[in-house]
Image 1: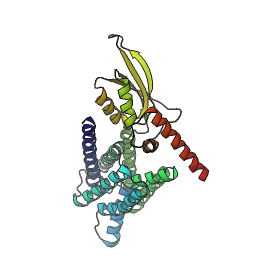
Image 2 (image 1 turned 120 degrees about the vertical axis):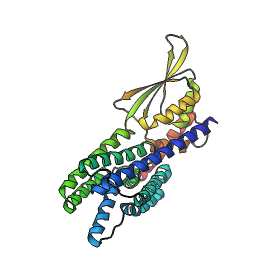
Image 3 (image 1 turned 90 degrees about the horizontal axis):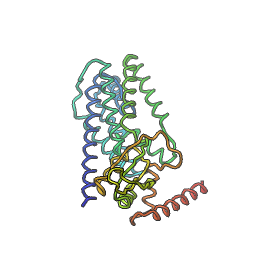
Image 4 (image 1 turned 120 degrees about the horizontal axis):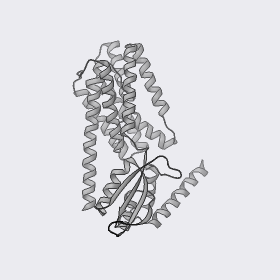
Length: 324
């Protein structure tokens, strides 16, 4: 029953975040950026440019959302075939909903001041992308391409994204005017800053969990999170009761799942978070955690099972290196 309740809470939270992410992006584009000819980042910016270029060349008004839809359909299919998973599915659905909303929601300037439009448009689009990434999906476009490239090659396309944004700025400057290009730079900067502030998955925290039900909490955490846990015997200074303090390092985007897991087992557990500057040693990302869970299979997770799965995964990686 507890597992079912937790599952429904996660579904409800993800659904709420999905709706908020779509709303923020559509509002930022249709009410701030698009009506003021200020361009967003990535596929959004390319779609805006194409919409303006088609109108200038053939006097056809094709909404930005239609180009956004056309770009994201092959990108979503490629992501599904190459990596699959919840991330790709939710990202593709998010992109489709945003594209349709951009088509049917009327474009209306919330403000005609370009500086305000670039700042608030960038903040809204950045908030949309940031909260989506924080809760396990994206707004589509280059985010899916980045995931495919990272999983297939282990490399990042951050330089490619920057190059695309640079080209968008250049075309905007030569096609519309350098003033709009400068405002576009302001919007892109605001978008990047908000994404960095909200999506803190790369940041690490150290959690100290003081509980009287140590073994049960450890078992529950091992079922949900593939993270190392250090057990520290402790005693309450006031109550003189023996307890267990669990120390673990985790990513910020894992906080919600960790707190929910601990509360399900021990609602009275005390959790203290410490900022972690850096981590030396092996800190597994989400992909390695998923591989570990697949290696362990549906059986109950124990320390021996994790060690066995870790050895199997290491052997598989060594075999792949030998084949290369």
